Image 1 (cartoon, helix red, strand yellow):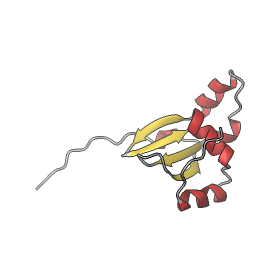
Image 2 (cartoon, rainbow, N blue to C red):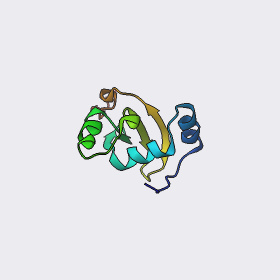
Image 3 (cartoon, rainbow, N blue to C red):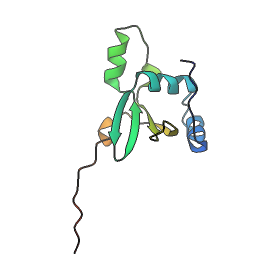
Image 4 (cartoon, rainbow, N blue to C red):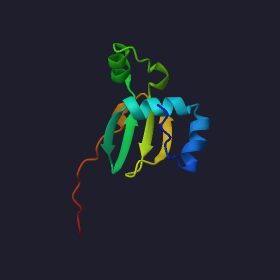
Length: 99
């Protein structure tokens, strides 16, 4: 888990404010679920990941609920904690109406 990630200034500031350590970020990037939604990429650790990896001896309780928003190139835009993963849903395809 010694990999360094490219962070925007905004992401560094939010990590400090939200007490998300570089170790927690590395856990999310390594073990988190990838969700593609609304043109963005999210890496998240939810209850299922914590429970599943606990059987393998990996403790992710500190990272539960952490979400990382990434660019297409893999740069970390921001990080936050939110246990409700239902908020990240692929956008519904809507057809543009031209009048």
